[in-house]
Length: 386
Image 1 (cartoon, rainbow, N blue to C red):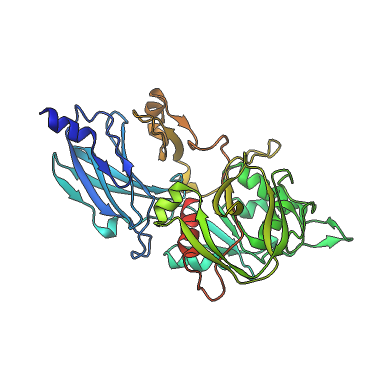
Image 2: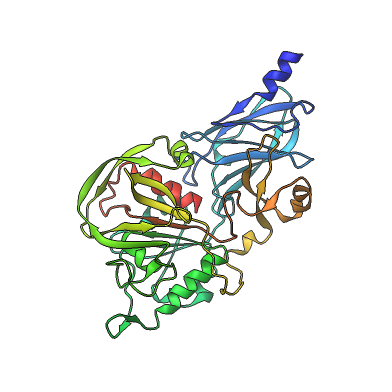
């Protein structure tokens, strides 16, 4: 009997230690399956897979790079939750019945990751991230550069992709942006209220200012202070060999930690300076950051206004405190919040100091030819974790 208890406590699923928080007293079984994108063919690694018992204890694991998962869960009828990112943008719920000491298999058709977010993109000249979004089986709405000037238009979306080559600001005089300042203000408000953005290469100008790109450190107009980040268009056409995936969760999800990146265009934006307390480096070449993200941006003067799809109105992101201290970010129904709060959970992502959305910036993007090698899985990861 003692051996059985030891085995139960130490059971693992996927690549993360399982956390049946009352496993010594609750009979359990196993749930297995494979997470797919909506297209039904692309396996998704790094998705959190969990159930919640009647005491609001969470049993969780993560899908492997090939999408497979194996979860120990309490006996009885339950809901299997599959989420990426914080769960607000992509998630799936599957009813399951777990039998003591037996394995329940989830059909592939039921473990596809659903799109909850409403996604927009601005067409670019050198980047077509929307082609990757649609190849995964998801949908994105094209909006224009002019649409970014209308907050009522962009506030209906959860995620906005700003492709390289999509910016063409209007100037009065030589250095002063005219009515385009509204775009910086709108993006600042959008992010502060929980919306997320993706920017690539020349789209750095949306962050710090500039015209079609950010040609040097110190350009005027953006919503990010230049102490946070600045750029220069001094990148050369080259192959960057032996780049590193710095983020452990990303590396585990995509199944590799090194790659070669082809920069097939000259004058790409190099990151000249960044604040490491503000940004997390996801991909780098030696000490040069190539992909970064932050969820720490906040504009304290921005108005508080709803952002995103109404489907999220009854959902909330929380940091769940597990019994072994391995805190996890999940999205739950708001009706369950009081019970979670009672045992130490708190509102927001475990990794965030604000309630703001994410900002991703990447120096590389999908090429016009579509031949992007291992950069492809990285961009897919970005899409699903915004």
